[in-house]
Length: 89
Image 1 (cartoon, rainbow, N blue to C red):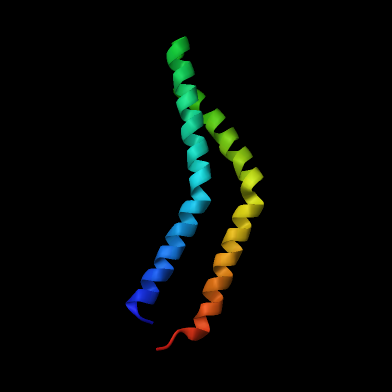
Image 2: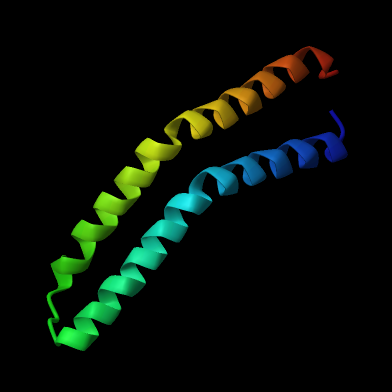
């Protein structure tokens, strides 16, 4: 395996990881921002208040996107496993 092939697979793995985690992080960021704004407006400074909406939102998005995420992971795993016989020592 050449360094170009190894770099390609590392790049594909990172791209897949970012595509899988990106929507969840974006939702957590948006919900956290909204909760922070509401806390600033209402002067409620409870630290644990921001965790529950984030957990619920990320959980909902995870349930919504689970089939797509599983398909992406499966496709990547199939590509990697199909490439294994092509690896020369």
